[in-house]
Amino acid sequence: MKRMAVLGIIGVGLFVAASTAFAADKTKSEEAFDRLATLKGEWSGEQEGVKVSVIYTLTANDSALMEEFRPEKGAVMITMFTVDGDHLIATHYCAAKNQPQMITSAVTDGQKPLAFSLARVTGLKSPDDWHNTGLTVIQEDNDHLTQEWTYESKGKSGKRIFRYTRVRS
Image (spheres, rainbow, N blue to C red):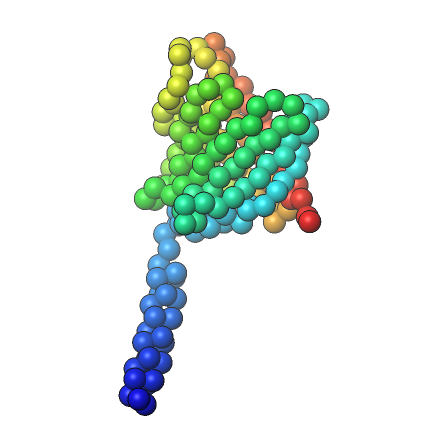
């Protein structure tokens, strides 16, 4: 019986040591995703006079971060953030009924702002249709977030900047 107890303690110790070693071996893109995951919760902001609520939720066994964009007036939109090798992917499910998929370059510093560029877009009826072409996520601190979205429509490009503050319960 003592032998089983000793083997059990050794087994638990090896499991803890392996778990710690595994966590230390995270890639830069995984570190960047973990930082992005700290957005979990509710945020509030305003864009062009319209109040906006943004809710971040981890899903799929914590492998995807879902952003739910809820303007006071207008359609709800979803953006899903995931890790893919050495970069991150953001797929935006837009009120314009298209889905731009944007990726970062290879992540070399998980603490810097994340700049996503358009890789492809599904759901466009015409290349002239309104669609997002990029997103930069700037986590200023634990309670302040800025997003810079770029877009194209009818051959013209533009940018919208959103600033959010964490909602404390």
